[in-house]
Length: 270
Image 1 (cartoon, rainbow, N blue to C red):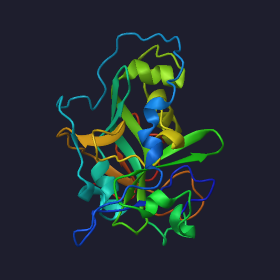
Image 2 (cartoon, helix red, strand yellow; image 1 turned 90 degrees about the vertical axis):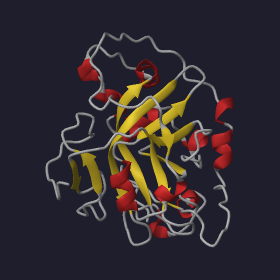
Image 3 (tube, rainbow, N blue to C red; image 1 turned 135 degrees about the vertical axis):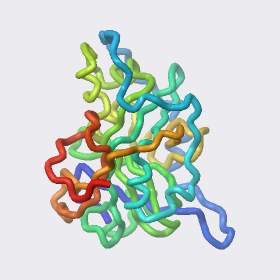
């Protein structure tokens, strides 16, 4: 299931807790995650940040707990819906960046022509066929990265693409990473609304993060929960793809201003 080059939303990471007592093996690209601290940090960018209101979904516990691997060892559609409201965390030497997940897309594996795994396992998409809960990063359009998480049991391909986040902490670092000035609250969606923007804001690249264990708080990049419950979840067709474009596999929090694209056709409000 592998989206075509035109697909902005796509992913297919497969993995899940092994059955029968087998231990998980880390994806072959995990070394890129472990060597992240050796990479240089982006150069500081002059920004102007004025006092602003708290983000829409900023009411949360100070404690963020990582999601268990079993959370991802399911059908990508179930994982995608359940990820809404969860928190993406990035540890940096100077700050901890956090943002709430508000828009995702599910990619279903070999039977999904828009998924990267549709053409079978390759060196590029190997993470998608590994255990669940690992980051699959790809470069698209020659100018930005996309973050996905592997789903399903080990050996099966499937995953979820992250399309939009709502910033919670580390706002100034995100703005610096994106090289933009925040003059008012209206500028906040420029940080993490869209798969390419959110990766740039969080410093996510294939070399740095492909194969990272998103279930471990020891990773520089991981996903957790703080008790927040997402409401007003709706489903729409995926966007930015040409294959299986009508399938209702995009999940988002309706009314959230950080959603990457206007919701013109809601398939099923939940």
